[in-house]
Image (cartoon, rainbow, N blue to C red; front, side):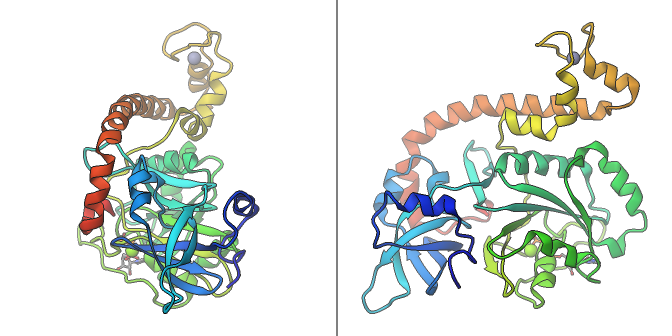
Length: 357
Ligand SMILES: Nc1nc2c(ncn2[C@@H]2O[C@H](COP(=O)(O)OP(=O)(O)OP(=O)(O)O)[C@@H](O)[C@H]2O)c(=O)[nH]1
Ligand SMILES: [Mg+2]
Ligand SMILES: [Zn+2]
């Protein structure tokens, strides 16, 4: 495979100018303990990170993750597939969330992705608010969000479900598919051209791995039945993995997320709620809270029926969450700086827990 087929872009080529020329670019397909499974022009490689990289990193998010481009050099003269990772190239996009649990740390779920498929089931697990949350993260990722509503074969009321998405999904392409029957799957190929990278995200059991298998044409990833009663999945996929398609393009499968806590900023929030934001530009006061201020264009739009009140309520909810998050993040960043070296020493010795996935 050549580098362009693996997603190499001018963005990465430019970075090479200032770096040692003898190094070989490769892309992270999977992390396995502290070993990195890499795809390169010469085929699959197995990379390791030198201890100094862990020691020098100030946050875990700086370490290479699935989708990252790294520069490597041979680690073992008898084994050409064994390499050391010398540099991680700057990403052009990254899908992050707050790490699961109490800590306010960024987890980069996938790097250098062109599109994010936000996958949701059209069965009883369908939840418009959850899709809205994923969209906040997707907009801050720097990649293009695409909503994929799967299990169309189980859904007698797809129009109703589409309507319930309402303004949430404005401007975002929506695809109704059935990975089981194959309906609508072909259209997804439009996002997976040669060198294009797509990451699939969504709750457990929505059919992410099944969709990828349908796109690949064979059972590359394990899939698992959902629970009776609530259609929740059983966390069948346990690690993130990128694979390439024969006809070009790369797909990243991810484990279903239990929590989707935001790791975002004001700008991506404003983008997610561009309907509210656009209306707000016509408010009389710059600092209008869109409550009972005179000349509030947001309230006027709600009264006129051109803006849903629920959108304003969601926006406020996310803004509060973001404010709380920024406060915690600042405190967390201070604490993390101190702990980071100790923690990476531990990371090297321990298996990642399920929570880390
Ligand atoms: N009826 C129907 N079932 C589907 C469809 N797509 C997937 N499934 C089933 O849904 C279940 C879960 O699918 P997976 O692909 O394992 O779901 P996942 O999103 O990868 O789940 P995790 O790996 O746990 O995050 C499996 O039993 C699939 O066969 C579909 O379009 N229609
Ligand atoms: Mg899966
Ligand atoms: Zn206002």
